Length: 259
Image (cartoon, rainbow, N blue to C red; front, side):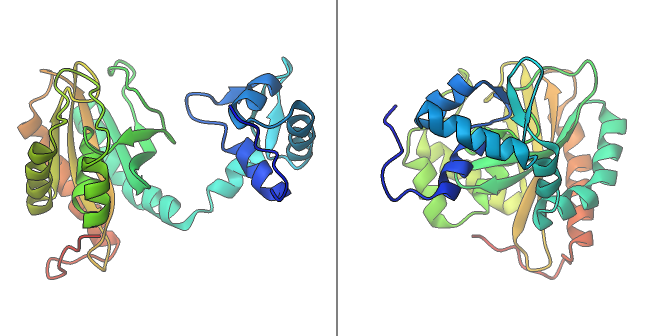
């Protein structure tokens, strides 16, 4: 990886580079791993880590590995969109979980991916590829298809004209087939996915809209293929999405916007 210590780089940009090296699937890192992931010199990484640790943004474990610190986590909970969504959606997610005993998750759009901001999971539910804070592809996840279908034309074309990864033999990667799916998602506000992202996992998702008709999030239930019929779970997911939307200010007379 090329070095990124070029002249003109601000200290804050390097601090953020170190922090953004942490991901849900790599939540604890060593100094050597941070150096490799950021491309920064060892001395620079060591100095930045010391500053971040002293500020409480990073935590150094007894084995020397680093994790995100409590103070940074507390700061993240202040993000107005995600926190208000999580608080509003929580009772509905709990009801879905109680009724179906499956994964129930809430996701928002960020860039060209869906970010999981909350999830309830049954102890014996099937394993998934992402965690809370993890990212999902837009073209083959239930929440991703709902969010992409309500995004602007520019994002839709950027995703469909890009490299569409095939995660399983069931993943739809044909752009024209996806355009038809997205049109149906916009019409119904829902998406169903059969083993497109994870083998053995089906997903049913519904949009969540705010008082201005913008799709601000998507709610989904992920079930083991064959354990629960998708059409049986769909009405409950739609009703929960509508309930959350109403609390966010949406009413039936408000037109659903795209983009």
